Amino acid sequence: MPAARGMYFEEFEVGQKMFSPGRTITETDVVGFAGLSGDYNLIHTDAEYSKNSPFGARVAHGLLGLSIASGLALRTGVLEGTVMAFREINSWKFVKPIFIGDTIRVEMEIVETKAMKRLGGGKVELLFNVLNQSDETTMKGVWSVLVMGKPE
Image (cartoon, rainbow, N blue to C red; front, side, top):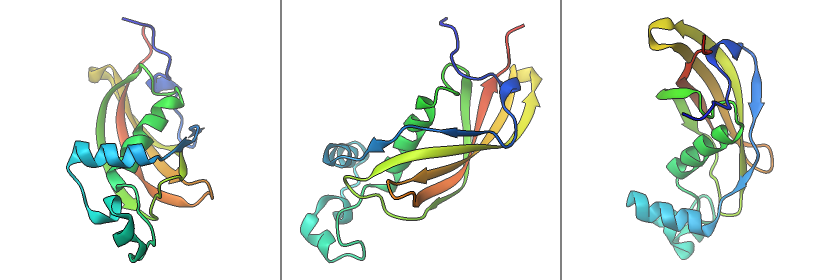
């Protein structure tokens, strides 16, 4: 088993903040996600229809943004190789649309930790804020992950 690069449960402290790099949402992302998910809603796939929508242009799928946020969280390195399970998402809100060409990034803050020794680590709750290139929140909520403890 490769050595863990991420943080162990005992290293997380309430109030800690982590920041991901950015990632630009592309046409390929949106078309690929439509095919993968089967969600061909016109707001995602039809430029002419979308011009007359409240957004004025095509928008990325909310779940595409959520999926990319998950990958961006891993790119911080703090969860790589130490997360044992993704437990839940709470209070998730889609605040603003993500447009093709937007660059999003993730800010995470530790809001709770709870030791779970019988599972070999503990639960870490992270407040996620997904921001666009204008520092506007596009989506937010709390993720709960099970993180392994330090090896003895």
